[in-house]
Length: 109
Length: 114
Image (cartoon, rainbow over all chains, first blue to last red; front, side):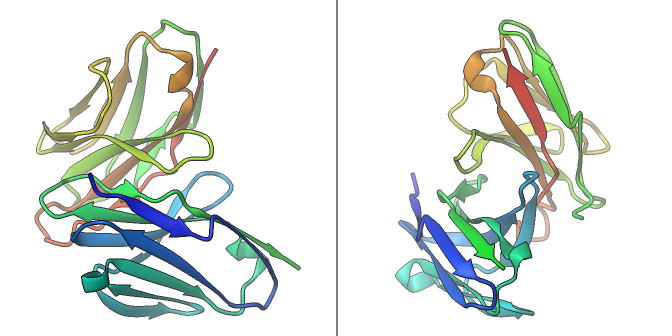
């Protein structure tokens, strides 16, 4: 099945810093989503981005489907950005989302 | 908030017991998927229901079963609970006919098996 790898596994930032999270996947996909999981377990939709670039406030994402990777950019990080960021993909012909192992982000004041 | 609701929030069961978890999909969504998230890991796909029929299943044993109702809400049933079933169970809904398949997740049910 499709493999999804995220890097880095852990990231510690000072408030105000910028960061880039990466997601590599092993096969063609027709759905790619980025989620932020808060400390209570809620998965919050950040982007639906099977290809191209999107921006939402301090967050932006780019997916290069032909090269099988996606990037999530966080600018001017805040303590509320802390949590785990997951990339999830749906391979062509399948129903399920396959999640990466996540990037655990800690933003300190 | 996504509009996907789950109940109960927390649950403690004993090994060997049975449990039923519930999910109400977001308004207008006809497809519900269930995921299991063990501590420190990403969610793993259990199965998906579309128009009251299972149309995809992950690598979970038959003691994990489900239902979808005409209003598109869903249940996840787990029989003969094992200690390893302790996890966060997440429900996600999507509108299968829109072509995007963006999934929206509920807050989850945290199950502890002792």
